[in-house]
Length: 365
Image 1 (cartoon, rainbow, N blue to C red):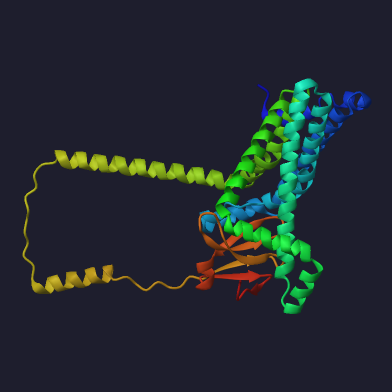
Image 2 (image 1 turned 90 degrees about the vertical axis):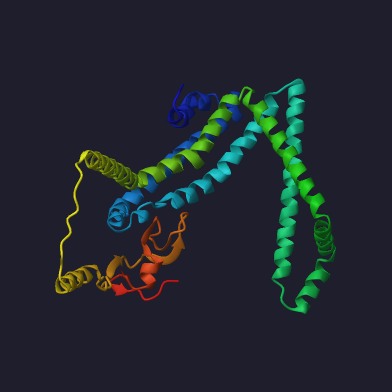
């Protein structure tokens, strides 16, 4: 079985030169393959650029420094937001474009009943999606326009100029509010029909003569939004994972040694000979001296407040944030990656002083 990366990086280029030379014989298939190749090149380039920016920005150095103070601060999103920002913009256009061309190609190359079924499934999906999209846009824009009006005169002028559409909008919302259960059932039914028709058309496309291109499209889709982001996140947090594994091993070793010591101690005490109690007489003076020494040892001394200083660059943006585990912290943002500076409690209580460009930061919202 060929590896995923071979299917994603190498296979899209196979036969591309011949297809371009014989473009007229199969133009749609050639265009689809060119789009998939461009997606592969773009994703790989963004991945490498994001990782290089992470290294140049001192990402690993920041993780090592964080490990000395708080292990929870080591894991970071790194340049993952940057990756998704560029990939979602480019692939949000190219993936649907390739899928539309595959639909057209499948219809053009099908015959008989298969062609009719495929056209019907495609039209059902298309009509439902367009209807839902237009309805959603209409409700969103009309709601936005009305909520932006403050004065009665503005509302009157707006309704006068858009009377017909406003009446439709109001009646539509009234019907939804009064028949909410029916609307929900209708939306679920329409969604089920749309999904079933869409899956059926994809299965037919997979079994058609462009099925191999559709497989490449699916592989590129998974690589762009699942596999490559996971790999980027993992290699940018590799130091954190290594330290985590070392800590787990050390803890397990300590637990094992402690368990062995307890077991040996119990075994030795079980084999020991009986011990006779010896009582000694002590004067009240000696007892007072002993008690005073015990009190001196057990009385806790007041802890001094330890202040730590964290320095960040002047162009770093600071804000309060909370990660997926609920840890509330002060987050630094260099523009291409985020990192944790300290906990919000440490900053608020003055245990940690943050200096930005050499100047003390007094407040962070």
